[in-house]
Length: 421
Image 1 (cartoon, rainbow, N blue to C red):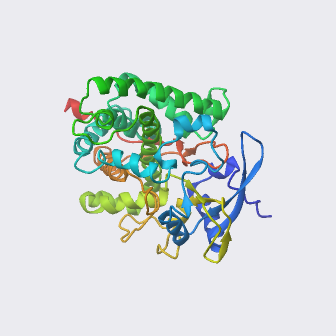
Image 2 (cartoon, rainbow, N blue to C red):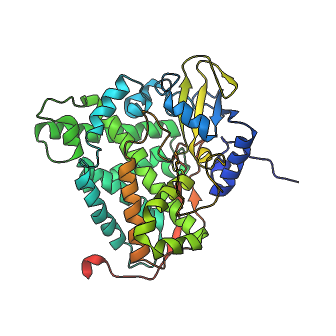
């Protein structure tokens, strides 16, 4: 007898292999562009309905129409976030214009390729440093040794956060990213633990921002709070929510894509060989394919602002539209042989960094750079690195915002750090 299909809110759904999950999403997508689903609100105990959006056309259409499908009602989570949480997690990702336009415009000045040049150069140095710390061991948990520290170190250095605070940031982001996984909660309930993590990061950033207002340096925090040419700056209460967004969403795209990318290469040795044989030529398309297939960000929410009809379906005002990016990234109407991992796939119009429109990922350029650097160094410095176990996924409570990997064991021939050569 066939096993009963797990629902999206079942924690077991998200601990299964990536392809198994995507097969279920493919069945949902084949049945129609929207699937009516529900999830229990952990704070109220009430079941709340939403529409799962699993096809590419509808997902991109909704993303392009912020006036019809807004981001500022509720939160980025499926259920509405309580007011006390918005103080810490209410960044511009959960805003609409004009507030969204104002904050994003301020931050965007520091995220152009030119403005990021020093950061992009430091990515190589930080990646070398992290691999130096693991390359003599021969066998490590890739998440602990590389995927987890590398992107977070980039962000901390970019913001001007001292290395002495790294573990504080790491622990807090693990709670927020952990999606209710008991391993990161320390016996606490998920919501209080998330609030505590948000308070910790906010206190740290408030102190740093105050210091930079008095004595600006060349880091991103200074650029956001201090400017001599009269351009608008982030208000004091806006800095910490932006950092939390950066430390969580910006960190995790690279963190999860690195882990799942290595696992995808293990599952597809022919594609790994293609990449290793032509690193310069294949890296750009390989990075895009990892983001497409891995789709690190599971979903984002939009809320219908008026009654409307989309693809023949009537949608009520207030309807929650949950955009499942991984499902859209395997839509056979857009991608040939969508479940095949192809490091030379071109074109590749994936939505792994979000759909088109005002909320497209501001840090996509940095994430692409990080992934290009980390895989180039892995495939050259540890050319025989191999996965020696299955990835262990987060034990999420409900539908996780990020489909994170907790552990991925790898083995390789030990080599000397570059610093000793």
